[in-house]
Image (cartoon, rainbow, N blue to C red):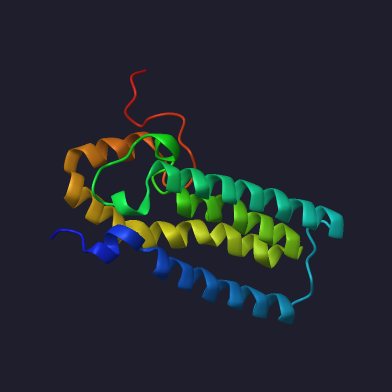
Length: 162
């Protein structure tokens, strides 16, 4: 079944964002009910971590959009630019950088656990989107998956020689 225009444009992003926000609310509730478990105890360090994570998130998100403009999504398999390193660079920018910067800023291990948990949650969230891509682009997409990471860059290939 071909992708709908909504799937081409948004993928599984809206569902993933809803899940992320729901789990963040749960993390806030847990953090308010248990003894604080500080990571660093420094307001300045928290602001610095959040600032760096925001800069990295915005840079990778903008790179992602420049690499694959919304009008071209789902129409061609893009494997250059940000997509050379991540299969889902827009999602990766938030999962790999922003979530951890926010967790460090909030200065409680509950939020670090929340940030770590987002990776497997989003891996499960991506199954449907990647199935659509596989249906659309076949073996070319499988080969692309073998040489790139979903949310963390892969600098090696599962099937590289040697």
